[in-house]
Image (cartoon, rainbow, N blue to C red; front, side):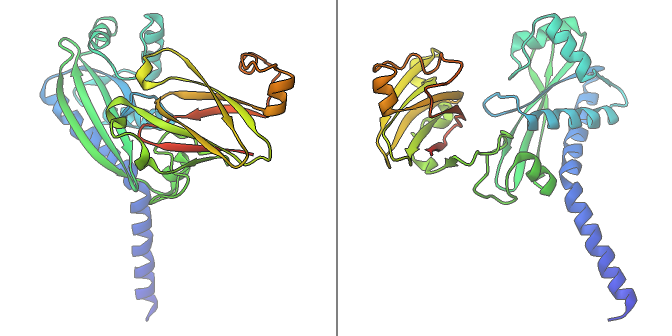
Length: 304
């Protein structure tokens, strides 16, 4: 093989690598371009990007990443409209005490139209799949709060994005589906198929605790149950060595847990657990922490 052919192959392979690395950005840019054309066709002049959220309405680091880049791309394609700077929008939201932590509702959309004088609010959702991030962008008219334009795209997960998410490309044991909170060494995802079939509609998951210590432990969990409204619940669990116990239908929120050894529970706490989540010094605790309950997911925390 001569030098010219070798050089040609090298250039071609380099081009493929660069294309793959940039494909995520390219697809997001195309998504913004498609929506920009639809907005311009309606004669809209002033745009605010509300943000991208998970399907459950949660704001995450990945959502912020998508929002920032999408805003830049949208601005570049806005020959006949202008995009409000996100930092300026955040200031206005705080001044008028508007919540930007999740989906935008009809009243907030109309309120934005008044206080910021925008014609359109852009919002969207995303889903992290095995090798792509599915993104849906929607344009809402601030007068009616009705959706008048939308676009959807699949963004390939390249090495940089996978690293940002804390996941492995094409799957892996540390996949966290875009919450940008890599699993700790004590946390695993297992048997999601065991979660109740209503989990997707009602946004709940399961949480289990595996006791690998040589002593019986007592665990108090502070959480929200899907079937008990929005009130905070306390659940006490007694787990023998080598035993696993689970909590079911836990709402997609953060669960806090506090763990004490059985002998401490009997001698020091006199059989009462109320001190566990109120003691700032944690002098009684064997372990404590928080778990992100994910929709339709069964998680196990290993007590070591």
